[in-house]
Length: 262
Image 1 (cartoon, rainbow, N blue to C red):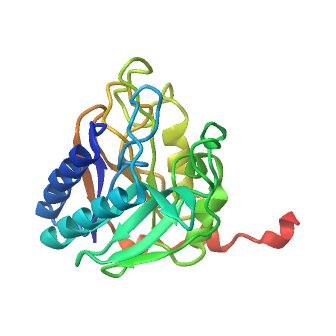
Image 2 (image 1 turned 180 degrees about the vertical axis):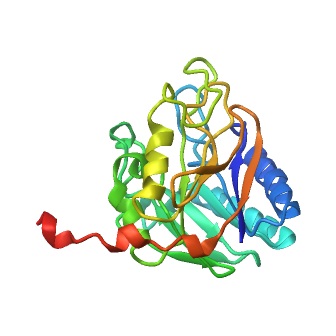
């Protein structure tokens, strides 16, 4: 099973975002990846004050999702597509899941919002597992993957082999200049990602924007915490890795005893 994580540039519009999704999904399919994950709120773009993305209607977002469904079907690849989304009157931060046939399998909402997001989205309330080509996986979005390890463990104890982690840690105007994944002087984010893999004995696959000053890389981390693939900082493209799924046992996650913490 080969998977891919994308490092796309920040989209200049909804249409530009779809163009970038098509380009990187095609590249992943050519490398025989079964699924590719894009960064947090990639359509229309994370609402950072620096980037000023436009807000779109429910109809526009559904049409965009339909177009990406066609991309998934055309290239026979699963796509995890983080988006703004409206559901039952709520405005949510979600990650849509599309099958290699282009079927819309549902979404994982961001349930644990960063405090800075309280006035942007409403928090979701459910967690879900997904399956594409026999790969069982969960999704945890940005802040909840970094600071709320329970979100990753929820999927691991339910037989997830991978947890995908779309996130936003990007700037074009200033920030750290990173060169080596997991370096001791890097921001803590990559260390947190490594721990999510190790403490659950599963793969952790994380996707960030290709900005001038990213705070972390798009990367795929093995159940022992080793980074087995990462996309160079600030360079648009994809990182892919072949997964040894027999190593994703969930052993440490399943040994968790909640009764000890009541």
